[in-house]
Length: 600
Image: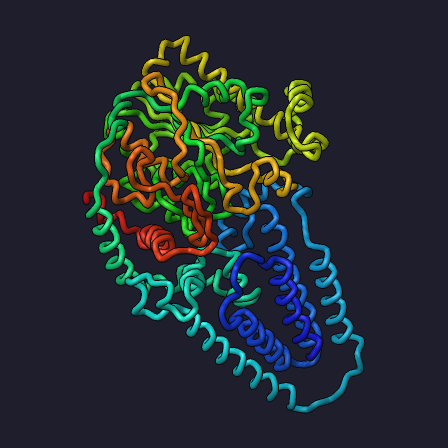
């Protein structure tokens, strides 16, 4: 039993040591260690209560389970920058379709420890000398389980923010500062792991993502949301020089899959680069990632301005909740035909139903528009007849070809561009590490396939005489996370952490807009209110957590857990304002707040 207990405690200590953030302050009082001791005691007590054979089987199984969970954490953390949470299971089936063995990266010490821990517990379970202790194991088990549970509940309650501090949003109002709110709402998986430890983290993730605590909070949620939105309306949006300048124009709203800043160059993507130089270009824009399904994260936020809760939300909520502020509904109210186009099947991330709920008249995938290969963006142009069938049109287009992995698995994307990509990379001013990377080369080839579609689209609009009346809005879903070497991506972007790596392209092209570089900080949550202003759409700006990029408000990018960047300062420490923004935005979705507030 001592070996089993020690292995559980050691696993948590090693996990937190391997992934500790040296720049972050240690949680006050080390609640993670206390949680871990309680869980280890409780699990040991549970095993003690089992009869002999069941006990010997249970110990290695429990040890193996938690070792696998930790290895899963390591893989997901490497791929997404965030630990696995129960909420990720909603997207696991769709995400697994794009998984590659190159993403199986685990810290060597962690892998060795897991093997040794399982072997050690197996040995003491089946090969150590057996003794008869009578009823002592049962009595000890009951005591350990009871003590572990009682002390664990006590640590949990002490870590939660006091009920009367919620409305004030003072970080100092809680015994553990911002950690109390992060633990309660699970808005930052990485920090929550440091605060709660491996075992309590997974349990807390399950409780929050399943909504077990929401029912008792709904009444208070509505009260707090009413107050928050009322406060936002006290400082209403004011018209500016860009208000309504694109009213009545067609809009092509284009999400660029994995097109990172270092890919959007004249040599790699000449068509898109040319448009960027003639656009209103937001040069300090961030695709903040709040859930691991990062493409869906950005498409949902860009369309609605809302923030998906990091702790998770049932997929039914995206299908059934009311979103009166979604761009598709607002454009439809203006007489537009709103349609969405993506090569993937409508069942992926349940897009078909979700897009319909957001107000799109139809979702067209590869077989609807006659694509022979759903991976090739150049074939998206076959959907043009539907895109311009009735004008004015609002077309949401999601590209695919930038998707990874950048291996032979997706050779059908890269092979047609490999010669051109090889020549371009050879001439590029890039680190030698990038020049020697096959992944880098293939990522460039993937981007060239997307650029081919952009060139075809511009040419088709010109041939149909639509360029004068059409606006092209480009934004990227996430940094190029399919590169397995995250350090190389950081070097290419000149950054050193997982917030600033999220800087991505966002620009708006129209013949009615003079080219301009805007250095004000923006993020995905600012896209919807910015388009509302440009196209003169009838919306309540208070509904949006973000701001119109052309207004005097905003200028701050908020990331998972409430960390932030304002163009001068980047802080991993949340403020009362960023914590409140994330919690209010999440609560609005959890309780379907807008259903009873469609008309403000």
